[in-house]
Image (cartoon, rainbow, N blue to C red):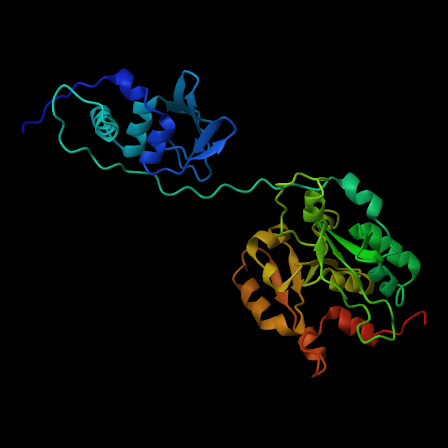
Length: 347
């Protein structure tokens, strides 16, 4: 059959839902409010910035980033890399809208690469909910006062915004706030610590950790569908306060606190757990000199991880905990060393 110029009902083609057109072209679409968002085909769009407006007598697209957009046909042209005729031909064939002449096989759409999943909209805990909890009377602060002057522990509680909370029969549970480098409270971890110096579990957690963000959401004190960040360094809010200091990175907040009172020339931060040593978590350390001090059982793992992020910061990994660890303590950490090496002030 000879190639011919086909005639299309442009009004009918432009009346096809632009959201459905985007989906048929293989583009990822998500609803935002009353409209939808997709990646913009007019520029290199890594995060969806193209608004698809369909309904209430409207049917068009507009990019909030590059300012381009248009009707259904122009959108199909840009997505498929087609001429006007080719875009109309594909729309007519795909949605069963006839033409004056029989069209040859519709061209295959040249869809955009899959969109990156949208970043979750995190909920941050109002500082007004944290402020009343700040106290140096928690179980971990009681442990710290065995070795450090009360004034120093008071300073530490204020510096890291440590709190005290009643939970599971204990009125002195320790609250560790995750406050990011912009001062936003990402979540609040709650643990209780053994305060009896004669106990072999002294200064170790004696119950499961709880997260107040989820607890308060379940109680209706925060939005019930709230999502909370889990990639925030404990102590990240101090990085901007001490921009020229060397940063010391450990695994647990408890280690950071014991070490902060013993070696105050460093800014001590904690990853929170062994598996949280990843780029998203360590981004606030960008360009800093960082001494990494893993627990005894994580030295090799952490050394390998920070080596893969050498472009992020000037990392130096210390095997101090492994060298100091007794043979029967495979999880020996900085706090264990400081408790064992220090003479308590009070008995």
